[in-house]
Image (cartoon, rainbow, N blue to C red):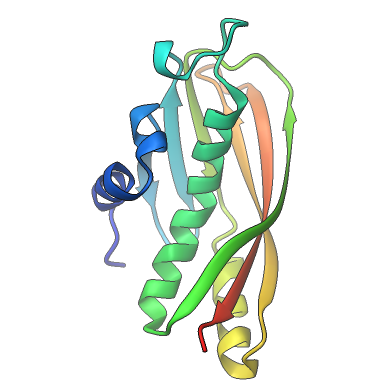
Length: 151
């Protein structure tokens, strides 16, 4: 695996500056799991003294999308990717450091293989769970990714 957390954080600075400026950082990435963290602070707060929901969404999406980007890159094929749908549940106020973990990397390769083999777009859902420093779930995000061979 050629992609590291450090490389993704550099990528966010140039390609996803809103995520970078609000403190979203990849902590670790493998083909199966990605961990992204963000710390509550003045740059990502809402009027209710917690983290703005959209910042949580950026961190959660990156925990899924980073693995998609990596596996597309490793395939050597020209494949587009896009979030088609998403939903979220907010179960506790997000303060302190929130860590989002996605362990659905196993779903990506099958979709890539299918789109390459058939030429048709493929979709799959990935879940990212955000927990606070006490291990309490603060939010859960689901993203429906679509991949398609560029033609």
